[in-house]
Amino acid sequence: MENKGQRILIVDDETQIRKFLRVALTSHGYVVKDAKTGKEGLEEVAIFSPDLVVLDLGLPDLDGIEVVRILREWTKVPIIILSVNEQENDKITALDVGADDYVTKPFGMGELLARIRAAMRHSKGVEEQPVLHFADLSIDFLHRRVTRDDQEIKLTLTEYEIVKNLAINAGKVLTHSYLLRTVWGPSYEKEVQYLRVYIGQIRRKLERDPSRPQHIITESGVGYRLL
Image 1 (cartoon, rainbow, N blue to C red):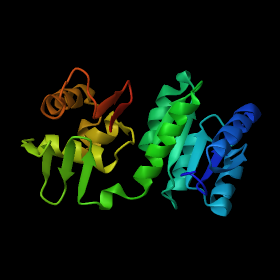
Image 2 (image 1 turned 45 degrees about the vertical axis):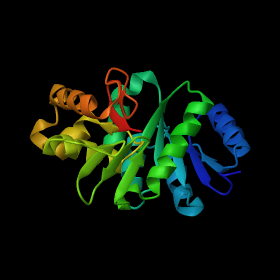
Image 3 (image 1 turned 90 degrees about the vertical axis):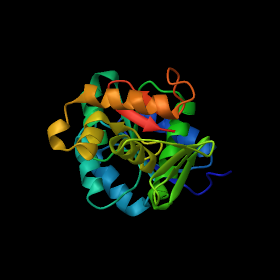
């Protein structure tokens, strides 16, 4: 199996969720450990040294967001958040403080596996590659050049900065506030409509069918990801 030896830590206080994930992920070749509290999870990250953490936000001791903050002080391990619909704001905060992705409960195993693969690919250092390829798109960071089917696409400086940030974090959800803060600065952090206008412009240039984007995907109420 291609996943053989890759280690996943599950941090969730629900016994049935931990059992389900342990069985399902093990059957796909992953080595799995689990913890039922935030404190246990932090200890297991240090001891088990996982390749990825699946983290529930609603833990009985430490808040899941605090667990993400603590982990980001000393590790870049990919973190996928498990959340319920009522935790929309917490989900966005968790992404802003360093989580890589989220899956909303209840979730399908196929979706979670796809998110795990994407997060692990990103963790292997896509930002160190001078050229990234996304099907018909190529992004050359050295020459600040974006092409589709080898035809150069003219982007404004701001449009390029948005695409660059999405590409460096390919597969990862970037929140509205992260993109606004990174590209325009802290004073623009709440200007979500401003970002939507630019995303629309970029899609008209990059996507074959802007009304059905294949590369820049909207995560409703949260942000965008590049595939």
